[in-house]
Image (cartoon, rainbow, N blue to C red; front, side):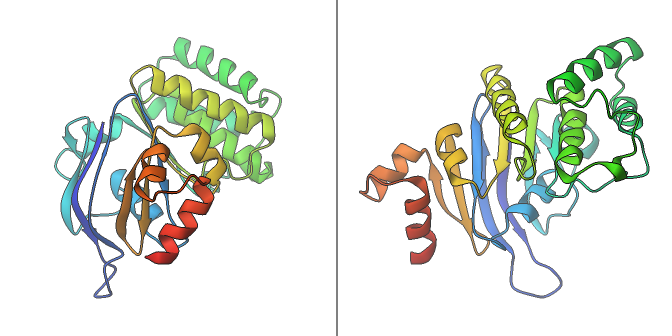
Length: 241
């Protein structure tokens, strides 16, 4: 479970980019985080994962405060960031072993997991190549593999489908569903509203740093008295706001 309580964030003395938001992402659900560009999605994700500090409020990962008990909180997080261009001097297998070292995965177990994930994402033939030689989609896949390697209870994904080929995108959505079915949490941001409509149990819409809707797609249709696609409802909600 991820709990965001009265969280705010401002850069320098500018207007708040995150303004006193509250969210509860429950175990066993896929939770979509939607909003226009610049609405505060990535900033929120960076605060959840401890990359950015919090000005006020707090965030709890399975009861552990990201500000007061960050190491324990981060042990239960797997983050796919919005930019996969990192550790580019490492080979694919070196990167995966580095992640395995960080999370204390045994040699025997990591061999099994790396083999399984590399075959699932069709990366077994390029693990000896450096990440800088990978395409954007391949870099995205190796980052996702690294996240899944330690089987975190809470998956946090920032635009995870960007750059993925159709099969890998399909596989990732299946992984997300299976993860949630095991009473784990999946929290992801996306601009692909058709994916959110089909995949999410609940969604939140953020605009100008404020949460303007939380609930299921069906609840959204009832609240706005309109039997429309998520894309149409999203445009109406954010334009009205």
